[in-house]
Length: 500
Image 1 (cartoon, rainbow, N blue to C red):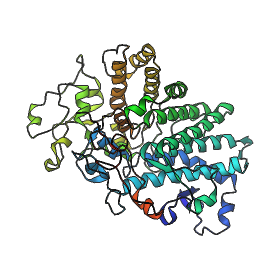
Image 2: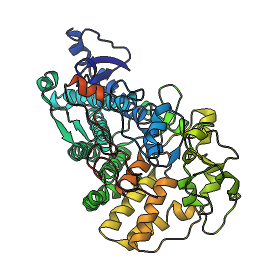
Image 3: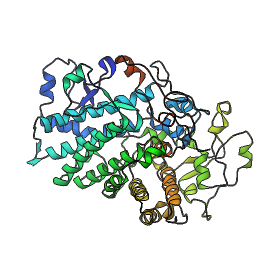
Image 4: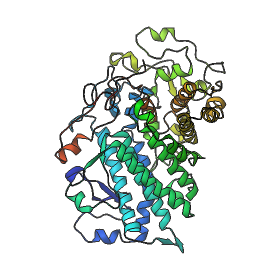
């Protein structure tokens, strides 16, 4: 999509990119043609049609936070310097370098810019169809509710991931005063308020889906027939996930409104949200570089979770020689997915001088069809993820019997061949944590990081969230800050826990 104009707090005036149809390109921001370009209902619909794609491509970008948080959570491992992987997986951990000159500064900048670009486009659409009362009709059908519902979903997704990834953010909606934006008069809000606003946007999407019947055009989410019912299910799952994944520590996790999470999850996904890639406008670099030969591999922590005979950490040069033989068929107490979803490797390509803790003997192979065709479905939210949200909500209410029933009817038993869990809080909590790492591995970007974060299991010193990018701070004449060992508040900005 062509960039139409800078809108909020990034680049020259901390601009916030706007997008529109490929046939439109307005370079002069003072040109009145800009307003006429967005006055055509078909063009507004075209922008709405790009919103889900914009978010999907941004969150699954390799040059963003997805791969970095994957290695930072010790879910995956790689010693290469690309994508911030080495710097964010150092042991012991180091603070995030938030200077604009840092070689990996783009990792936070790209996602931050992308979230605001998607948010800006969604706000512009809603500014036309909600604030401006524009009606969008196609072949005699009023498509205004459909367009508005997708735009509210995009607001929720982009604001939500700002709240999940960053310590604070600017909040804008279709009702934000443009003068405040142009004059840099907006204030920042802490992550929890950003999450709350995102959920309110998702509520608007859900309400529109409940009161209208529609089906999104095929190109908006390729390979998935997105009816109003399915769109509402997706919005409900996202809302449940935002509330459940946003806590920075166990104390905050206990304070979540779990009844509210359960209400959303009970109306959540009954299908896998997995758009079909075309390797042109839809592709998934996160799931490519986390599994491609010579790149990311599965952290031994996960290997040990599936097969306790393997070590959970690679600490010295002799470990490779004492590895057990890989499991290739069902063995009681060992997860079948270690041979159905993961591949045993005879060698490891990583550099010894960068630390044996990077070494691994497994890679994730479940979606290898994508690596050969580049045109298969690639999930971002799976039904199983919603199941775990339902189970977690029941765990905290508490309904241990109900939570155990969801887990035992699911992939832990059916795909993993593991024994059912007992209806105890400890077993249920451990099983939910486990499925988010094994069944949902590399599905929703950041998921393993969020699971480790709220359980106080990220390695000591790991940033629990990221600062507003340094470039952004400079433009806004704000003081630079960052997070990591001794930078910020322990347990709230950087981890003072750990898993070993």
